[in-house]
Image (cartoon, rainbow, N blue to C red):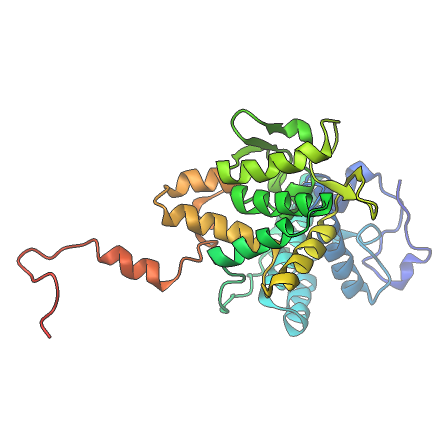
Length: 325
């Protein structure tokens, strides 16, 4: 059972009695998410609950089933004033999903549900986020790791090689275990990726060599594939956090002057390079772990040069190959 606020009369949207967690729409929704996605979405739900009740309720003490169109429309309008379109749409997605669970749990009728979720997403007009990393930038990052002869340098090189060579997400790379790695074909089993799905990705031979160098230092004990190294250079089989990955990349980037990039940019580069090499989008989609090819296409950062070169493959019968000067 979860707590309710002491005085529910302070707000009509507050729960008036404890509700079992298995019957609470917010907890049911959060339980369906991958572990890495739960904190962010719970934070979004808490923010919505506080917004609707002037800070009285959180996600667990708000009576989501009592929300109507006037509430959801007000949430949307308020969020638009304070946040970016992408962030607002993430919040609205969480709101709709919780209300859908309220409907499924028979806490809300279909008419009220349909009206409450009838709020459009905010149109995103700005340029695509992130960028593709240049080949030299990736080489410089790897070299920064190679220049560090300690176990930390070997581990960081393996991290960059895995991000670059497999396109896995930051949350996925820290959850890799040694048992998930197949030395014979360079396969990595990604468990509970985005959407809770498992998939297999593969390391190219160039990345495999870097990873094997790290594993020769790490050892063959079971546990996380990428782990901590203490100040004395001793390998500690404790899993890295997603935040630690950010710090590692920032540190190596500063060493060689590679700035303004994120771990996710390796993923964008991975997808763009595969598409640029002629791989069909359905194969790239499966490797990236996307639900649709449209999602994969949004990661394409090949730019105008790729489009220009593509049309050069076309020929006009009877025309000169080059224009007269």
